[in-house]
Length: 286
Image 1 (cartoon, rainbow, N blue to C red):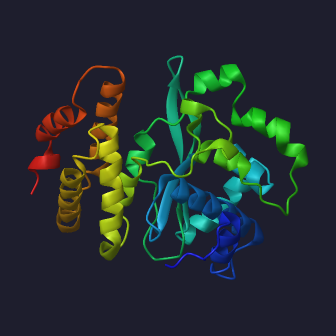
Image 2: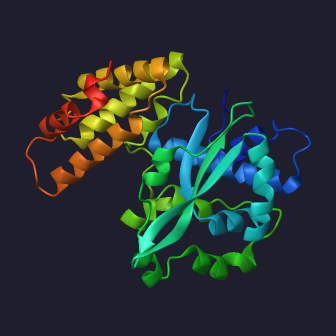
Image 3: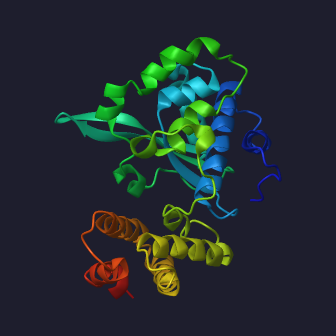
């Protein structure tokens, strides 16, 4: 699918939403437009391939409703219509607060065109940590607080992405920055998840971007980029042939090594990662 040529994510999302079936109701269409615009912003932030057809991100349902200009209950009434068309999948994300399991938000997967393929949220994204709910509650950064403060200014006919982007782009548990101060050019390890979903003929660029991000994470000055490209190509071959998906496991291993480096537990990030990969199926699978 060719994305509309515009620098404005919301304008591009409106064009994509126009391609949905005419039977789609006004409310679900507006919700889909907002989610597509958010997905496009996430693509730019994380430097995904322009040929990406699905994007997954985290955002609180209350903030999505606020951005669309509806009550959260309307959001849940509209979602089944989009899910039936294979355009949107949404799953609650769970965390533990004071020993109790709580829902801290929703993981969304958005597809840019309707297909017969069933859409679901990738399991790897459900295992990730997106925020520190206890800290957000203490600081008053919850979606409910945002809803109380901002709801009177929302008009039903408008879409305001800033409420969604507060969660989808800026990682509230890490930096707590405002949307307009984000660095949309940073290299992100999330590109690892894009490798298996882009068309085969466009994988090379995405693999290169992911390999650069991995090399940056292990802090070796780019020396391991070719090695990581070979690893990613091998994982693609495995997935194409057997259906086994090791990209989430690779992402986890790289993040662990990056954390070890930052905390001073190792001198060579690449050596540590290579040692750990040898103990898994990521290097030994064929």
